[in-house]
Length: 97
Image (tube, rainbow, N blue to C red; front, side, top):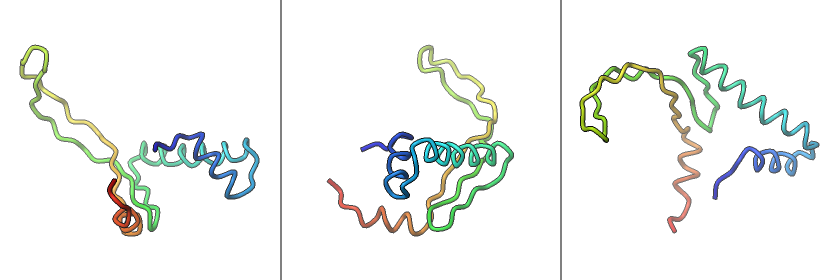
């Protein structure tokens, strides 16, 4: 099952009793704060959940799948997420279906 922003807002409303508009602002603000921090090159550690940051991907040679031509792929910045120990342990306890 996939959780969307609407699902997160609904869950937050159910857990806290917040109104829809207030829960929406909370979820959107949380996401915006993380995006702004990453845009400024900061790491965002959330204890027991994980850490987000930005890494530099080096330049490399790639291949155009349509023409099979070799192309040069420029270096770029890519976001990453490293799960924390509590999150890893929680996922490890799940049953494979």
